[in-house]
Every structure is written in C-alpha cells, then in structure tokens.
Image (cartoon, rainbow, N blue to C red):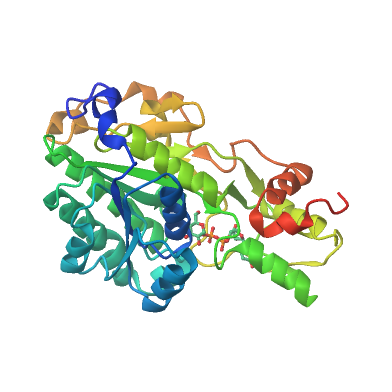
Length: 356
Ligand SMILES: O=c1ccn([C@@H]2O[C@H](COP(=O)(O)OP(=O)(O)O[C@H]3O[C@H](CO)[C@@H](O)[C@H](O)[C@H]3O)[C@@H](O)[C@H]2O)c(=O)[nH]1
C-alpha cells in the first residue's frame, strides 16, 4: 500500500519537517517521554516547546529544572478540547504522549481509558487540524496489538482514530502518524526499578513468569523512533523500532548480576491480571505491508476504507506467508547481553568502571 493515493512521498513533505526555530507541542509533556523529548528538542534548536499536562507541580519542577525560556507550560487535559487548542496555538508540530498507560488502572476504569486514550486523542488530532499543525505523532504501545487489556484496547482505538483521520482528510495539511513501542527500561513504576529496590531492601525479586518475554527499549530509542516518524511519515503511517527482547528470568538475573549479587533470591508470583506472556509489535497482517527501513518498520495505512468489496470479497495472499513480530521471535538476549544493555542506561552509569 506504499503507493496509497492518500500519501505524498516522504521527499515531498520533508521540507515541513524542520525543527529549527519551530514550535512543538507535547501532550503529556511532563512525563518521562515528554520531558526527555523536550530536552532533546531544545538541544536541536527549536523556537519553543509547549508542554501540555495536568499536573502543576510537575510543571513547576520542570520549569525550574530546565530554566529555558523557550519552554511554555499549559495546564490542561486532552479530554478538554479547549485546553488542547490553547496549547496548540502557533504550534508547527505535535507529539502526543498523554495517556493512561498503566494496565491495572485501565482494567479497573476502562471508561477512563476510553476518555483519555481514545476521545482525548481525537481531541488532539482535531485541534491540531483546526490549528493548521503540520504533523502529529501519536505514541502507542505493543499492547495495542491483539489487545487483551483495556489499556491496549483503548490504544488500539487511538490508532484507528489516527488512521481514520488520515483516510478521511486526504487533502489535510496535518500529517498524522503513529509510533508503537515496547517496554521502556527503567520507566517509572516498571519492573527494573522494582528489582533494584527489592535487591536494596534485601527481599526476593518477584518474578511473574520466568519464561515471559518483553521487548526492551531505552527512553532515548523511543525519542529516536518518534523523531524518525516525524521526519518520514506520510498520513496514517505506523512506525515501530526493531528491538531485542529477553525473558523475565534473564532480566532478573541480569539486574542482580549488574548489582553484584548474582545469587539474589527470586520468588515466582505468577502472571498478573491482563498480562500476556509475549508482546507483539506488528501483527502478521501488518508485517505483510511493512517496509523495512533498517532499524525501523513502516506500515502504510490501509487506504481501502471506502471500498467495502476489498474488505469482504478480495483476500490477501501475502498474510499467510508472514508471522507476527513478537518479543518471542525477535532477537533474544542472554544474561551477558542484557547486562551490557542495562549498563548503557543512565541509571546504572555509576556502576561503569566497577568490576564486570
Ligand atoms: O513484580 C513484577 C512485576 C512485573 N514483572 C514482569 O515484568 C515485565 C514488565 O512489567 P512492567 O514493567 O510492569 O511493564 P508492563 O506491564 O509490560 O507495561 C509497560 O510496558 C508497556 C509496553 O509493553 C507500556 O505500554 C506500559 O505503559 C508499561 O507500564 C512483565 O513481563 C511482568 O510480568 C515481574 O516479573 N515482576
């Protein structure tokens, strides 16, 4: 579908994708991704970064930490279109990171996930369109593929909302694209800082399922992915970054080895509610049309929307030859490789130079 009638060629739109002196709005701008992206953009010489988020305390902390007049803060919520529109005045580009992303909270409050992840994303896209923003990159997750929990299901609908906009507005000046990524190592509340804390407290590391696998990605790589999408997307494109994976057993052993306690006890607690054994970054159907761009896959939007016969009468021979791209069948790291990867994280930098 790379020759989609919707899509200008990447080179035709490349001039719009300049960051110098431009204004970029980031929804969820005070989160781990948002603040890392903001720092990156300021280093790249943007004119201004509009940070939209709900938490005034985090905005205050970020204002003090960054001390950069190019940062402007907008209190608001993606559920509230007016507050989104206010943050997008003068914006050339939008990175949409605001989301409810914890599996348990979305499981207990699925309508909250719908309001933020689906309707909020619709507000972001429509407000960007109305403001004449040139590009919107929406951040999604591997949990949106074959989703089994409300977080993934709401993110899957966010993706559909973004793709539907691309189909329905072929002449729009606003290019909407999607990035999907897996677990970001050391993100707030995730398993690696938990293992580190358990080791520090001298209690066993809690392991859900030793054979469970996850894609592993750094925060820097997630910024690279979003930038890759920003630079190359044509309307409705979905991008993933190829990533290695490891089992939870390997991850626990690697954290323990890196901290110098390779024999730290492990307690197996069982799979949590709403959790898959393996994650999928691209389904086999998506792999059929995916374009290999080196470190990335690009999946052009399926532009058949208005031709029902293509949905119901013509099949797709390609799909039967492909398989999902999963954390089970991607490059699998052993303990040694995982330790080396963990060593590259800023949180473990103080260990470098210590005995290997
Ligand atoms: O005590 C624990 C807690 C977790 N795990 C395992 O560690 C892995 C990672 O868990 P966690 O760090 O909690 O992340 P996920 O639940 O996989 O979800 C994260 O990764 C997603 C991408 O897949 C993001 O979309 C989510 O926002 C983010 O919370 C999973 O296999 C868990 O089963 C354990 O072994 N022991």
